[in-house]
Length: 294
Image (spheres, rainbow, N blue to C red):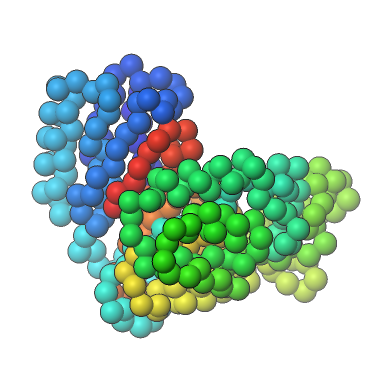
């Protein structure tokens, strides 16, 4: 079984013999920085000298490709302005909420709160990222994201910054309804939302298309703030929009990416404001004592 981080860059990976089908906290991986664009798995507790040698050889071979540390023209600029320096942006989805647990449509409602499991997920995120310095943390002001950010940012010196542009999509009368009820009462709207979200139209608004503009606004606010390493805590739909807009994907690709509760994604942004997705929806820290270094 090969276990590692889903990433769009070349990642040297150790093969761990006899690794169990589920992550085991006693067999945790450790991440160590090699460059600003590579996450490297450097050790597995049950790896043999032979597998370590193979991993080192893979790393040496990968490094000669040049990686993407000097990438140019990754996609269109998110800022249309030159940044003072390249940036790393870590995106985190909030922990499990009460309406996640109940199968309700959440949207921009502030009535869904972080559950006990959600708090523990936020704590796992904090531990997984505790060795990484962040200059700032931006969060949605909506309760479930705000509470997650407060747990994640505990012990850090800089104040949390709440951005309205990180709020979740507004889904109007569907918000608060259980998915099973929404499907029965509003079959046309619910089916469009689930199967063709870019064309979901309600109360004179295309929520997903509007979310693309909101995501671009959020990127500009985040990237034009001084600092080189940024943490962002927000919601699933706006995260999809942030990821897709950074990659130059249109609203029709809304469901082409997914992010779990507590999932971590990482972007490298060059001085032109062009983004490269380094890692998508990392969740190993939810099942073991992973520590990330990048």
